[in-house]
Structure formats: C-alpha cells, structure tokens
Length: 259
Image (cartoon, rainbow, N blue to C red; front, side, top):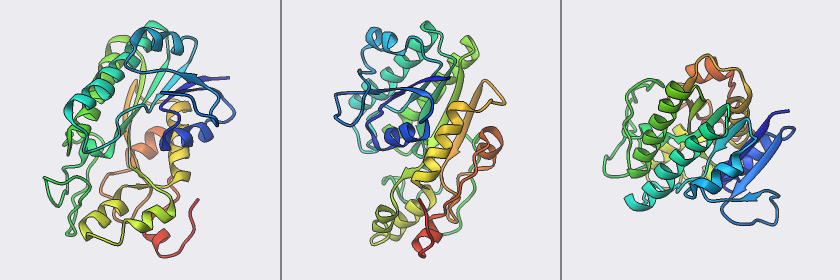
C-alpha cells in the first residue's frame, strides 16, 4: 500500500485529496489541529520538522500555500517558495518517490486576460489555446510563486530523480458557488467558467497524479474540468495522467448534474 502525505490537508483541495486517496495509507498534514482530520500538525516553513513528518512516505501531495492571488510578496515567498523548497529537500533527504505539487492556473493567467491589472478576468472575445509546455505567464505574485515551485520541482526531478507532477489546478467550486460567479462582471464570469474544476474532477485528477505511472520524471499538466470556455489544453493531462474530466461549467449552469 502506498504511503501518501498530504500537506494543506484541511484546505478545500486538501479535503478533496483525502477523499480521492481513500484506500491508501494517507497522512494528512495541517497547520493546526482540526477535529475532523486525524493527522499531523506541521508547518512547511520549518524544514527539519517537516523532513521528520515526511519520513517513510512514498508520495507527497503538496497543497499547503498562501492561496490568495492578492497576497503580498513577503507572505508568498515565505510559504509558497521557501515552503515548497523545504518539501522537495525533505523528499530528497527522506527518499520520497514522488511529489505532486499544487501549481495553479494563475501560473498561466496572463494568457487571454481581459485586464492585466486584474486577476481572474478573461477576454470575452476569441481565446487562444494554451498548452502545458507554453511559456508561463503568471498574473500575480501568487502566480509567480507557482511558476517558481514548478521550476524547483523540475530541478529536483533532473538532479535527484524524484518524480514530479506540476498540477496547475483550476478553480475548485461547488455547483452553487460556480453559479454565484456568474452574476457580475462578464469577464470574471467567463474566467470562472474556463477555470472551473468540479469536486468530482478534482478528486479524479489528484488520484491520478499521485498513483499512475508517469511517462517522464517530470510532468506539468492542467487540471480543470472539460469546460466549453476553457483555453488551457487538457490533451497532455489526459495522455500523461489518464485523466478523464466529466464535468463542464456551461452544462452545469444550464442545469445538468455534476458531483
């Protein structure tokens, strides 16, 4: 049985990861105690303690981060950059086989942006498709931190042979929360439809990233649902991870079901 540690396990994506990995030997790692999560308390900025927590695991799903696109540079560097380096260094020291790194759609967010001064906006005109291997174009300091994390992972893959999945996670929203994004600015509404990741698809892509055989030591893949308005390509995610997205924001908003 695969031993998997999940940092940031109490977050929205973290809770989906715990459900997705049910059946494996999973260690949730949270910043503080939670009554509904039986795991370990740890801080990714504390390198030595983190290395001890990750000892004996085969896979680390690294989700812990400051998730705000509006966060200031200092808070982004401390957690998202230094913390990610600590995870990879711990993985090297403790012989972890694979790190699934929670990158973000914000690493590519300036493509098709309606306003370069605003995050989470998308042109309402024809959008150009973006492949997994197109150059990063972050839309914020948060996006910059995710590009940096991808680069750190690629270095550890090349130098140390750690398997790395840079998973550019979309906007995880429930059906009701997705609907709430459609009431205001049409450029923001389209961004939400393009980047939506349903809970069901989130679980499926996280499970795949943590468990499937990879075609290369390092894989960078977009993780969104099969949205009609998407511009991030899913072809490589489907090939490399065997991901089969089931939900489409436009269909859900029209009244079709999604989990």
